[in-house]
Length: 103
Image (cartoon, rainbow, N blue to C red; front, top):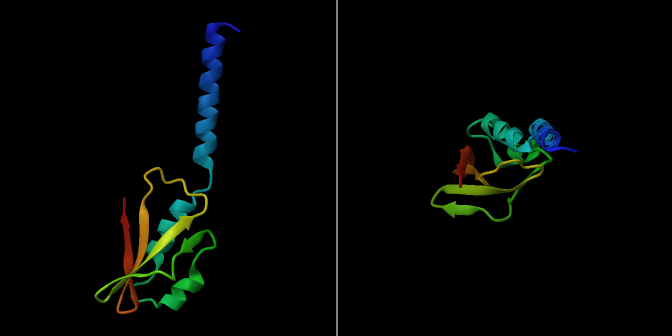
């Protein structure tokens, strides 16, 4: 195999790998969509019922500051987030307020 064939082979392998990785199902994106679709003022019980199977929320260890309670999403199966963001479900007075994300 000469040098040109080797470069073509490596380039083809690289493009194929990018294609496969980009076409993988992203549970990370599905998680963000789910979080953004939750209605404001929704109850914790309702949100638990609609929680997708690929998300693990730490319901047992809330972070409580005054009247705000945060529950961290501790695992997204098939996560393809290169930044490693943390996501929280935020509740005020026991009702869903929104999501909070941070690095």
